[in-house]
Amino acid sequence: MKPGRKYKAYTLRIPIQEVDPIEELSRELGKSKNDIFREALKLYAILKFAEKEGMEILIRDKNGEIKQLILP
Image (cartoon, rainbow, N blue to C red; front, side, top):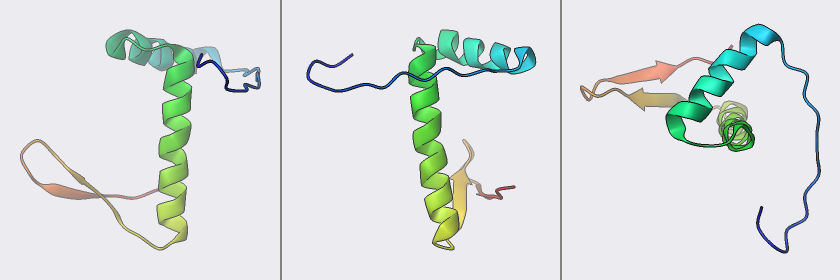
């Protein structure tokens, strides 16, 4: 935690089958589960903003091919 910042604690109830991917990401990236959730929420906010603004979300794969991401 960063000194001088205020924090609020939340409790999440996550179905067992959804815990494994979170723990796997945490291990692979060497980050805490809190960090994984924070980054996921930031990405979600960006995606929702883009959707609200009518933007297309494009992803370039390792071969340089561009694909459109369609949100549910």
